[in-house]
Length: 308
Image 1 (spheres, helix red, strand yellow):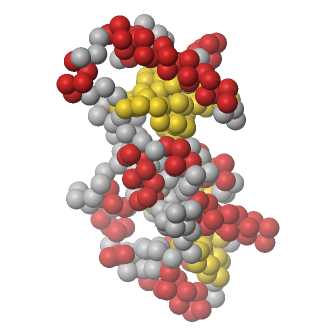
Image 2 (cartoon, one colour; image 1 turned 90 degrees about the vertical axis):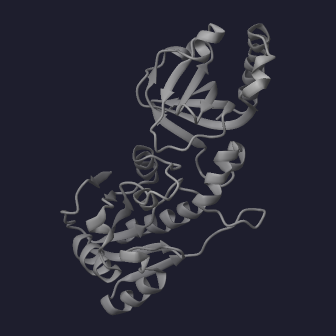
Image 3 (cartoon, rainbow, N blue to C red; image 1 turned 30 degrees about the vertical axis):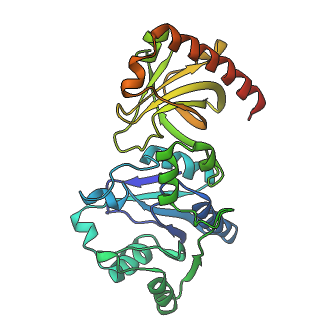
């Protein structure tokens, strides 16, 4: 997959089918857009996803400042979907001031050689977010390109599946519910380093994953996880801490010696919240170790019952 980032000075040569959006979390609604996009490969189009080098709401200081996916994680997902070109369009003052009309004509049609556009009903672009699905349809008639607008989809409770909904789910720690709304579990990509924190407390070989400051972590606590490295999944149990922006992971048996670089920790099941405040003062270290040993046994049972 070709990745274009850090510049607005580029020119594609082939006719493209383009999907526009932030794609934060790449939930089932996003997947429907991307699957529609991918169908145009059979008609000779290069598939192109146009997003931003970080979600636009990060540009404004009053907005929430953590995302479901980092740029690196989004690249992994887009490549797995089979996207040909990913454009991480720089969102700065000069690009944010581009009018919606100029964005369509100068960027999408001229630079991207767009012949097809696929977007959601709530898409927005251009200065003041004045560009929308209605404008895309109008310009499609004017400039003779195909425009496909994808309706939102709902879960079994009738809730619209959106990045906002997924963010609320992650904050609550309900990672199993997240999996019902996304093709992927909630995961964090990075590099492991030597044990610290819980590893020192319990005398076990934990690996620590330092997390990008923009990345949203699940509610602080213990989770059943799986570590992905070189296309192989390893059973694990992890402690997530949004306060420290780190994940501490214990992998079972011989799996501890996997490479430390380019690993992903996927969250599959919430176990319990972390000990907090006055509660922790009444729990001895010995009792914590005993409790965690029991959780290790339960984790192994869970992993045997939930293989990939």
